[in-house]
Image (cartoon, rainbow, N blue to C red):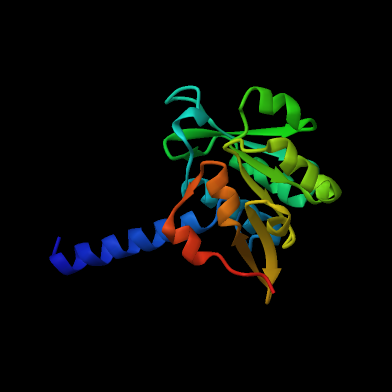
Length: 183
């Protein structure tokens, strides 16, 4: 096989892998909710949790969803995917307190149904090493860590760096560069 042909084949394989990695979901155009779920999955790749956030090196990365909405439903596709060498486990919860006692939520997605309670949920979390994400631009203003929102028909996200820092989470520089300021 000639060098040029091998290069073309490698390019085609890389292109195909790139296209496959763009979507965790079924064929076709992903919905806004699926895109937001993919954002949450990618956030997990670019966050460093403190050592004491996990009970062992084999412990799963736990994504908790509190409340109900379409993004929360779309997150179910992520169950058992691998992130940073850990299996992603999804927990749909109704009571945050029981999970705080076990220190077992590494990411907490607060669904729109909990909008009125999100500030209380953040207070309940305190300084737990839990990445908090919600699907509204006001979330970071209330002390949340990542707000998902739509602007110009594109899903965007904003980050509250002081909240992540106060809870012992380190975000990659790349993630911080991609964050936007909601208008």
